[in-house]
Image (cartoon, rainbow, N blue to C red):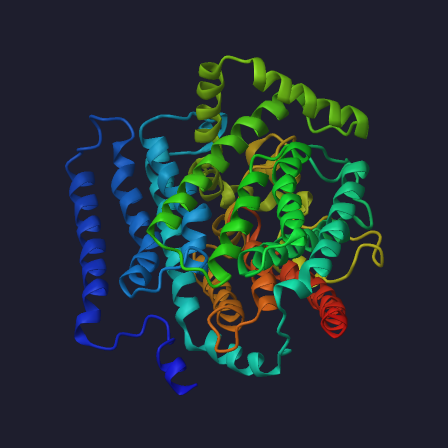
Length: 508
């Protein structure tokens, strides 16, 4: 045990040579800052529109990618390490790549006009992203996360399941998750549709979707970990493969295919198989294809449906058929052009953050009337009370109200990100402190469930929903209430799975 702990203390150098990367990173940050100052003072950016942003993009990029680079240098690269996952799954493409997209004028959202002095507020937004990610990194590597994990881990169940024990429980979890999906779909709270009023069980239904993720992860882990391939194995494999496009088709979401691929990739990584160079390349290609296919289908589906208004289930399924018919007949060049622009618009979220950075002080007096004032504290205190107990509970961080106030368009949900939510609530100082707290949470779940001396399938199953509930696109206010709700569902469902797995073991 002691040797394991010695080898798993995070980014703790064991010799002078290990200081090379941090020193180079510090020199790199210094060089970028110096270059930015010279660039600004000499007016080098005035001759080329948007290029003033590139030094700040580089600064943010270094801050976001530094943890991943260091983990790779130490031979501990894991695409699903919390810091690496946060970087490549959202923060780097949304803000760093997004900054490049803005610099080269590849997108021009209507709300750019809401950003007073873009040459100040866009770089400032990138600085906030960099500071926030540094705070996340510091929080992750503070000893408190490992300390809490060391206190929790010995008290956790010692369940050990084999693949044949989880075939039936995994399918049952998937069936339960699909059932929840269908109920939400019929009620108009899932898929590309929405209701004007919040139902008392809507949030409960939404979080019960965790069951589908649990079942999928459990079965994929069993598929990759199974040494014997028989009829049940191939039947489960076929079910899992069929569910990937089916879920994307019904939800009309541009990200649902990517989520499905992430589950497969994580299960492969944590099933005991080594992620070699070829596997890494295939994973990268698969993720890129998932993004492009999701964008093409999701954009076409939304354009054909026209709005998020609720329609009958039969009509909704008809929209799926109309979308597939359109994709099969449309000119591929036209599809590629429209989808490329949609992809650029979807990836770039720096401008959305800059709208908040530029206007949060001016709009602060109006937030109370939109029920957005102090939403982080208020949501943390009220979100633990179910709506079916408190019928008149105010909406939790209403994305439509936020969009109406900051973007003057309440018919869409614009990205806010934890950085924007923290600066709205607490000012600039809230960004590193809030992200530091989030980093501690990420260290706890990673050290307890993955970087542990006692690995188990159930821990890997629980890790996926606890990792992905942290939305780097949504409100910071909803993260910690979501942790409690998701953890409750995991505890109950995994306990029931273990009861069934034990019975299967006895009868086999």
